[in-house]
Image (cartoon, rainbow, N blue to C red):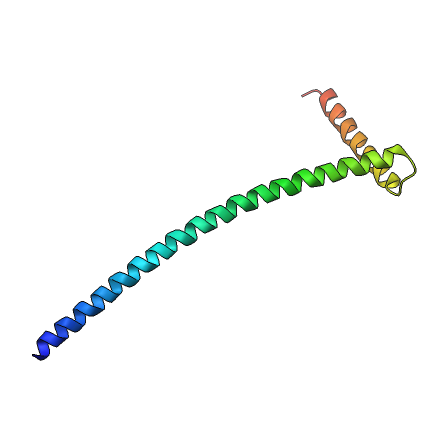
Length: 97
């Protein structure tokens, strides 16, 4: 009789382990899908941030070049930096290989 109760106990534990495995597998799949969704959303938001940073930079440059704004010095510095970069590119193009 004791052997039969041990077998029943083992069967119950196996069923419990199988149920736990199924539940945890489902949870893992759900969390993986959620992670993938959040990664995609993060990529989208990062791209949007880059676009907005570029737009802000262009607007500040435009405002600075337009005249009496507080961003005038920043705009001048940026234009000067861009001109130096263009000059470097021209110099590289003129160099013989």
